[in-house]
Image 1 (cartoon, rainbow, N blue to C red):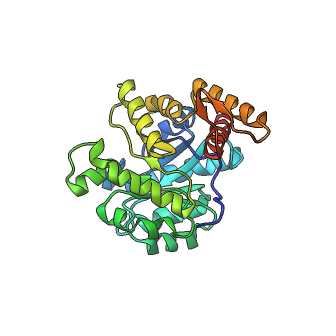
Image 2: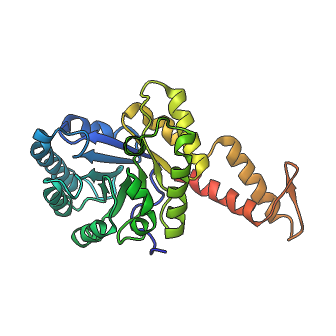
Image 3: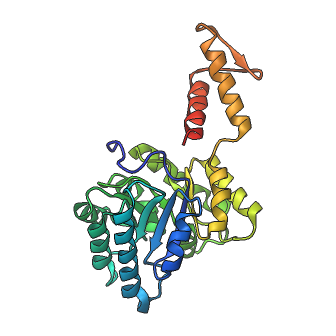
Length: 283
C-alpha cells in the first residue's frame, strides 16, 4: 500500500477535459465548477497542432502560476501524449517546468513508464488512464507505481481495444477490477470514463450514479454541461445526510448497547458509512 497521497483531498468528483489548442476555453473550464481541469495534449489535439498546443498550455500555466496560489481553484492537470509518441518527452518536460499538480498518462500499460515519469515529476500526482486490455491485465503493478494517486478508466478507448459493444454491464467486470486494484493499493477511489451524452442530463446522471454504486469516486467530463450533474452524482443526498446524522446520534446515545435506525441494526460498518457520508458533505 502506498504512502498517503500528496494530491489534494478530498478527491475530485468531476475531471473536465479541455482541448490544449483552445486557450479561450481554459479559464471557462476553471469556472465551470469542476473539481479538476485537465488540459489535453493528446486525443483532443490533431498531430499537426501538438507543438502549438504545448506552447499555449505552457503560456497559460506560467500566467496562472504567477497570479494564483498553487492550490487555488480546481486542480489543474495535463494529459500528455503516450510514451511511444514523438511528443511525450517534450510534454513531460512542460509538466515538470510548470510543476503541474496532476499528470494524466494515456493508454497506461507499463509501470516502468510511470516510474520514469515520477523521477521527472516527483511532487506531482500521476493519473494513469486505463484504456487497453494490457492496462487491465497489469493493474496491480500500475497502481503500485511511484507517484500514482488515482486510476482513471478510459472506457471508450477500452471498448474499441476489446471490440466490446456496450457501455453498461459489458464493462462491469473491468470497472470492478479498477476499483479493487485502487483499494488494494491505497489509492483514492478511481475515476470512471466519460459519458458521450452532452445535453442528456438524465443519461449523465444515471452514468454517474452507476459509477458511484460500483465504488468510483469521480467521473471524466468532456463538456462543462456535465460538471454539475457529475458533482451531484458523487455527493451525498439530503436523505443520506439525514440518515447519517441519525445513525451517529443513535450510536452515540446507545452507551454501547444494540441500537436500530429505520428498523435496521447499527453496527460498526454502518457507523463508518455514516461518517464517510458526512466527511464527503464537508468537501
